[in-house]
Image (tube, rainbow, N blue to C red):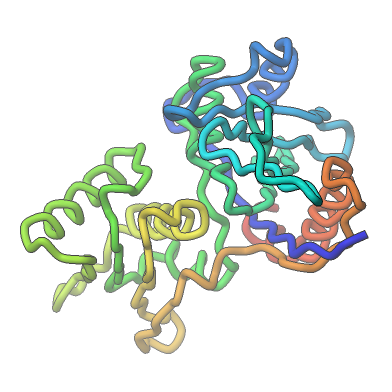
Length: 293
């Protein structure tokens, strides 16, 4: 047995196009395909597939793992007493475990630096099943989510090093990405730091816009290192005290991190990680219940 640090974060899954096909149904349809037929290239040289899938049953969530097939930049084989040699395999597999509660549209996702991200899961289902419009956004702590939702946002503060690498899908996201790209390119800068604000206006920022953009950028921070999102925060007016407060949203993504015991063979690690995700649900149920009863 060996120790491994595992991080689990919670997300809300929605379809913004009005497509009636549920996320759980899409995963079930994907898994019904033969293994080779459920492999999809979500980006050039970056293929995904779904494995170990179990549908939801009673109170038990849907669960499984997404696998990324690495076909480029494979490491060499180093055996004792022998020189470096080719691995002689077609690809390497990187896996991310997940659980999903269909009735609440809540996703618990293992976070790893392996290229498996919420946006790429969306692209995978779109390319495999032609179901578009998936939005998988972080669930924030109850206090942060409430402050953004109540419509008292005065400013959003953002710092991005490579806005051209942001994964933007909705019109709002694309508009913000294009603006950040334009400012960086015009000034030939290494990063862009901007504040979107209301100035002296008595009205507050559109709460839906503020919440969507903030949650999108928080997700990009966790799953898209290439974009180099370094700051996402909001200045809000507390409805009870009337005072301005700064919400540091990069620390507000709901989830758990812990060290677990992994079997000697990494291929057997899934059960241990799945058990940790189950523990994460229980540890965060009070927070989740407040937002998604």
